[in-house]
Image 1 (cartoon, helix red, strand yellow):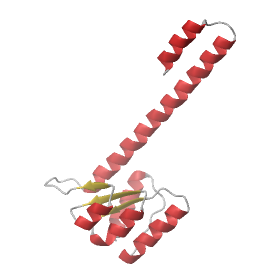
Image 2: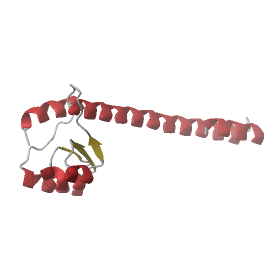
Image 3: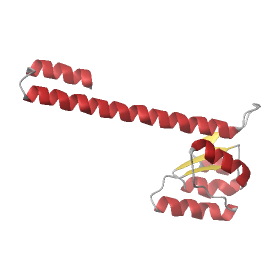
Image 4: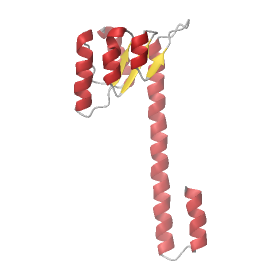
Length: 139
């Protein structure tokens, strides 16, 4: 609803495009982006955010609004802490990106080792038993 905190939040995540909308426009913007094939993260804190949270690829609710919490995939409860809840969202997204990077590296590394092993076996440098043992190690 407010653009001041939104700009800083988007900058922290490296997001260049974001929408500042009136409550009734949010769901339409999210729906349009998802129809275009975009992955949409919607962060909301109130009842007026529920339709957009439900339409987003990932909906995150900050606070305890029952409707928004039901519509969201992730709910951050406000506690007695001094931290801004958006800090948790930024950290969560950064962690997700790091996990994805590690998983992608593991897949590429495993496939590379499997191809090299198959080439070595095809060239006759590995016995079937040695090849099977190496494949188990790669997996």
